[in-house]
Amino acid sequence: MNPTVISQIRSFNRTVAEGIGALNDHFLGRGRPMGESRLLWEIGAQGVDLRVLRERLGLDSGYLSRTLASLERQGLVTIESRPDDRRARRAVLTEAGRGERDELERLSDAVAGSMLEPLSESQRERLVAAMAEVERLLQPSLMRFALEDPTSDDARWCIDQYFAELNARFDAGFDPSLSLSADARELVAPQGALIVARLRGAALGCVALKFHGRSAAELKRMWVSASARGLGVGRRLLAEAEQHARQSGAKAVRLETNKALPEAVKLYRQAGYVEVAPFSDEPYADHWFEKILR
Image (cartoon, rainbow, N blue to C red; front, side, top):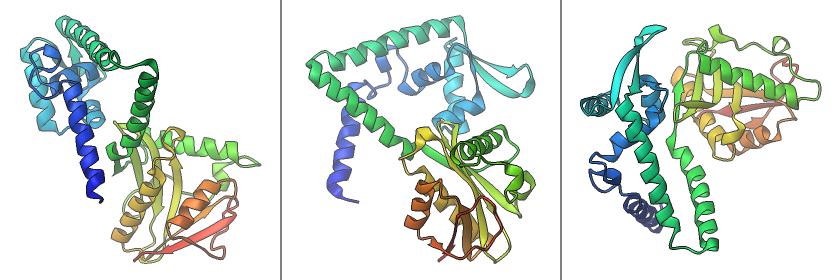
């Protein structure tokens, strides 16, 4: 990595930390560290499951427990069991907690205003546009990729989105019952795997594999949300799938795709997949690809 680039990123991080007042244990003058204030904001008026908090903010259980315990001692948060599932625990703001969250909102707005106040209108427009671009480009570093139960709500949602997009983009539509199978029972070990990409706990992409011992693994159900395209999510999902295929003992990965998906064809070629003769009777396939795993 270019040392000049690393230095610029570190300088940017220091400037932002100073600008938002994150350098002391009294964030926004409220007598508590930034982590506690951020949790108050994330819990929100309706409360939130602890599992969701961990996934959304990338926190380990120990840190989350300690921070919530501190907020409980301050009388700002209570921890409750969810009525429909006594095993699931939720964080809920008390009346004092809701008041504190409102005050943090007001003070955060004031900090944002103080950043804009010294600037001209054109400078403000440039700053806000640059911030939006930086935020988007930072999202890939916050993404998490993990094996998923193919019967989970997130897994089913991703697959449904995948089917809906194919149905919209294929000239004659898409009927999953006519395509080669990749149902839930085929996407769990040792038969296969489903990998889901998440940003702040929200699913935004998936890829599936079917294993056949040391023979080529089949790559299926590759999908990325439109909101995350252009951020390299597809490339990273593909790399995750290849790594799992290697670990399963597969020596190659094969896939089929349709001519209506030119961006997918381009991705596979750039990732080292070579177009080969048809190896399946997939009715929706126009291209067949294979990659030998090194």
